[in-house]
Image 1: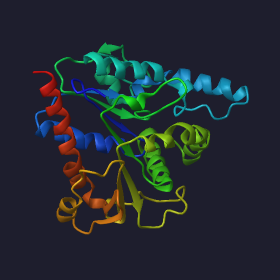
Image 2 (image 1 turned 180 degrees about the horizontal axis):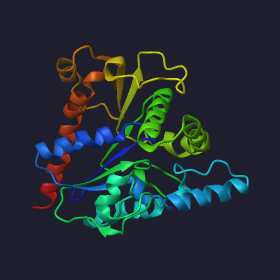
Image 3 (image 1 turned 180 degrees about the vertical axis):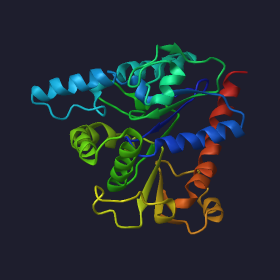
Length: 292
């Protein structure tokens, strides 16, 4: 953590909804005239798409059917920690971009599934913002969780997470349901080992819970809507959180535990604006005081 160079980290599984949370932060940054440098978790995958397929095939031939992007061996976690450390110390670092689709391929003039070149983070920013799989991970080799000043977890209940991933991968990436299922099975050990433990390191978790039947996520015809959901917001350190104010601003909310408030799913953006804006402003004000 650094008063001079604050870091915000949003972490969650593939298809969990971290991109939606990123958009809310972007709205806050624009409204409050805050300049952020951005890092995408995909930029720190170890292999491009073709290399990853080749490595997975080789690992499977050697008896490892669970090599996945969730695990440490498929990612540059030490390099990611190095960027966090460098930014924490001096506001500097390097990142790149993973090209997901044809639109990004045109924008970056790179093939789909490849990486752009490494580039220095822009200077004269107020904070660093990370969104991806490993923003609060701890292993025997790295401790990324120690650097962010604010860590956000995005954690739908597992069946909802699977439904979101199935629909995204089928509609946006052209995968068959069976292919998505195979990916889930391959990732499960790393999901348990690397993804889940991060949510005990986060400062705030947003967990969406559907209020409709999602018993068989592989047969779900559509993703439960915000109106068909509740969201549990858990604070690791609830002291200083103005729960009466949140209740007054968010209708039909209630406390499920001393550190958790439950809200209607269609109030999530409002809740994030109310909760996250003060945290962001505190980080920026602390930075400005440390850099007179």
